[in-house]
Length: 113
Length: 114
Figure 1 (cartoon, rainbow over the protein chains, first blue to last red):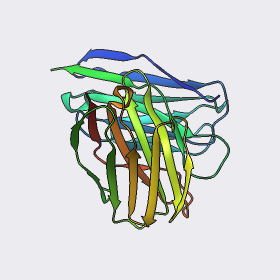
Figure 2 (cartoon, rainbow over the protein chains, first blue to last red):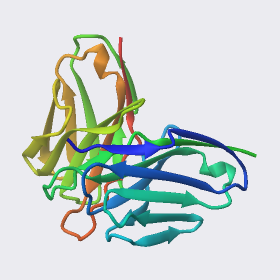
Figure 3 (cartoon, one colour):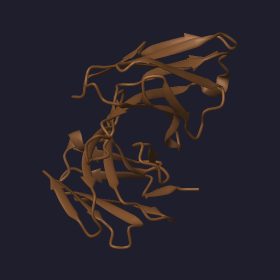
């Protein structure tokens, strides 16, 4: 079945450093979504990608839809303490048009001031 | 923030008891979803609804049932709670009448079955 694999599983970085994480799949996706979850909260949508090769930014965050449609990347520039959280990639589940999502396992980011 | 309210936010219950979690939305979105979140698994879909009285199973539906009698409310019921259902449960909504496929999440319900 469909599966999304995120790497790395966790990162512990110094404030000011850039961060890169990725998400891969064995099957093709037509949409890639990146969410951030802070402790005790639900996931919040950061960036949505709808076209292969698309590069989209949201402030210090930049995400790319891989050309093969089997991967996506999220970069965070000049990290700050409030970037702490779990970052999830997600894509449409199956071929049905019902908005169901499949999620990666998440990348936990910790930032040292 | 999307208008999604989950209740209760926290609950401790005993094995074998029934439990109902509620999700209420004020966005008039057609689609609603229940996910559970467990360490190492990300979020997994339990059930979803594509309209009033229209529901279907997700990937981890065993032991759960849902109901949607009104557009704004989506209930998740554990008929007889088990320890394996200890988890954080998230409700999400989506407006599939638009082009985008984003889902918006509630704040979650932490359920502990003892």
